[in-house]
Image (cartoon, rainbow, N blue to C red):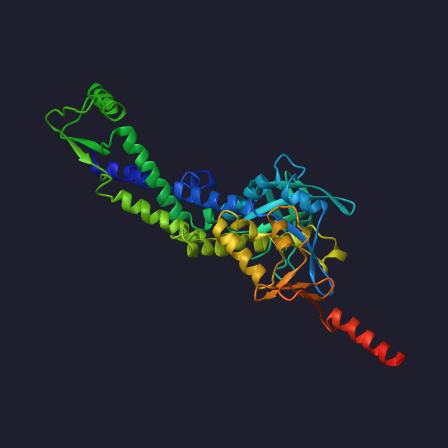
Length: 400
């Protein structure tokens, strides 16, 4: 007779296992892969611009090569969109995203994405004055040579990704997926073991194994005859008994919660929450990294990089044009500024509406024009027509 206690330990190990959760395993979970890709693709479509602080206003710096590297051609095998997607995925899954900044003198030649699993660190032992060097394939680099985005870091050197931070829930989801795969392969048959009241010969054991293998590998073989003294003992529950579908939905919701993705993402409020907590959170950290690594020391007081999140509203025409209308009517934007954002040719209309839909202001000449009365008033002066009339009257009085 087979000793059940001898079977207990290997069976327990087989069912529970101790597999380490890895990035590759985690990305096989549909809920996680879909959420991470959703965030990465959204971030990658947001253009990055360079601005300069002036005495009275902030102006966009156009034509700077660094902006081209960040939005178009990085000089690497990955273009800007691919680079930002890879960076976001490394940030979320591994805890740190890395871009090598290829400085040549005072100019940046290229931006080169480096996979997080190719990077290691050599820190000093001082817990206050912390320093470290970056090791890539055995070669030493200074941290300043990289634009680095770290998630949940405590030392400024290494971040903590969700694969490590949330390994338990990811392991549950991954093993549920493996269990489903096993059900499909075995036609839904339960796992278990056979108990025998007497010792079996090796020939009998081999035949029993072969018949059992056919049952689990070929759905056409759907029955096994157990001779007298043999008993099948179940070692697992069915998918119904395990409430597999309900657990999958719960696990998927928890994974989206970890990433900050709302359940109502298809609504206006859900979109705002997604942009605020998923997209802007990363973009804020990314802009800090760019300002630190892509600007010269003499530029850091006046220049800064910023993400143009306006692009996120381009998919909703009603919302976008409603915002334009409000901006024009309240004087925040001019018609040509709107046309520029839509990549349209300007009309040369340098007027700002002040109200009543019939008062126009030219900020260059500081002139207010009222179409209804066909009069032009200059702020700080009189109507031009009245000025001329007053001047003629004064001359006539003197001559008389």
